[in-house]
Image (cartoon, rainbow, N blue to C red; front, side, top):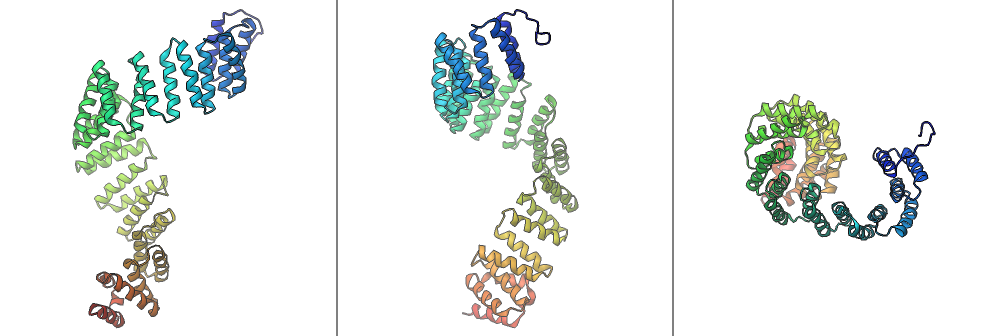
Length: 446
């Protein structure tokens, strides 16, 4: 008809199917044309007018939809679709209580109570009324025992309220009624896992797998539980099964790598870490795991390569910059160490050990002026801290500012006399100065 402009007669239900097809595929223009043609042939069709209201709602034309629904309400006050569409408008306007009130009226007239109860539950979720939402989803299960979407939502409500013991009780009742519900067993295992009842969790996941040996989620949760029980070889087997059932994931490869690490099989752990980053090159924790593995082997050149990979994904991660500094320090790449510490500070890691590490490296390579600037900044952040005061005192001695140096040395000795050994360790030339020895002797015999 659209192509030829010829007029053919269609039954209203056929128009409804055509319109629904266009709505489902997101082709709004064609849906409008179909509705217009349908209403030309069936001007009194309530179903077609409801579809028009639904299309207006989809296009956020709520006022236009409201006018249609108000008119239809006057004609058919018992039509549940009118109340459902009105509820959708209320919901989109963030008037969730009004949406609930409208859906409760629809519930009186509808034959499909599960869908309406589910919608009521979702509206309660928007209001963070988890008890009401849970009760609504539970009613869905009373009507349709295999409504797993509602079961998940019931458990979600328990989770949001941290009512995990109550969730266990609820799921046990579900299982008593339907012992072959693999979803209920799986959810029961999850709750036991959260409660750190790992043996019970493992039992629940095993039952879920017995019922459905293709249940990937159960295998994954079982593997995580086996890790908690230190059964790493068995956990690996469970992860490998998930890779057989579906395409392997970076997550499963990474966890297998972690299991091999716990089993002290470093080569195998690296092998699976590498598989994880091949599967997902943006998995920064995979790159850092490889880095750590090579660090344990003291293969710092390879570790440096992989820490750079992690930093290319998340350059603002100060933990990675700390690792970068440690590796470069092992390789005596002091300029890179300094760069790493400065980046830590720039990205918000202003812990004392960062400033101390940076100052020590600057002192080691003879950049005393820069070291003093770093220590002065650290002293503002951490006043009266002996680690800073002794170092700054020694730097001042090296720079020939003996007055400042002596003042700080005396302050450091007052705060923590024992820590003065750091002078001998890091600044032996300063420790051998007669003036320094005399001041330390004075405090020691005071």
